[in-house]
Length: 269
Figure 1 (cartoon, one colour):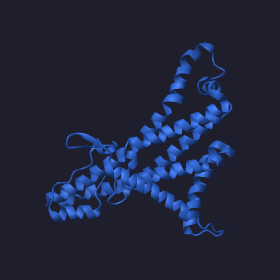
Figure 2: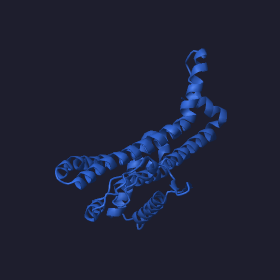
Figure 3: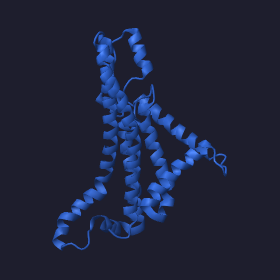
Figure 4: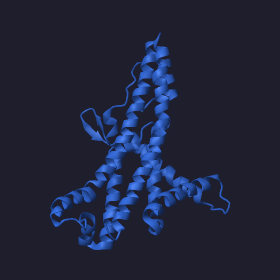
């Protein structure tokens, strides 16, 4: 991710040229040290734990004390919950959406907070750009929607609902049932995790590249000071663009989770 303005200023003041732009290895949940020993990424784990603490603290603070005329914090918390409940849970699941509103709100808030670490000075690392996090979230959703589907329809009934398309020639089932099984049972979590990971990883690298251009041009001196304006403008624009991407990816992941749960609970294909 790009350096903060403070870090850039310190780098230039010290006259150092040891800036290391973000690498591909940053977006995997391990670091290699010395002899090749693999350890957990400390920075990502700290941001993950801190993000969870902030989320819990926010919802506790916004819920206590609950007032008829809400304060700013309570209003903000209720607005987030209302947005997910009405705009995702009930919109997709109907009346059953109220039951899932809490889970979907938690999922949405968790993802958007982990995404927004990308734009926080000194943190500047979207936790969701580590492949392990989207993978765990996608597998959790996969387990949930398969579980509720099997619980309601039974294993055979759920497989039939997911893989059997009524009203087509019998011979087509030989081709379509395996395709539907791959699409609805096996590949859904993979597409969810890759979509979230790829978008956050790409934004993380793009802003880093733009900020690296600013630093290198400023260090070169002379005409570099004027040229640095171009990657500087690009970096600022990408930061605002990433703010939108952070929110959009959290919404899309939550929406897909609701759609998959609804498809598992549906009475027909």
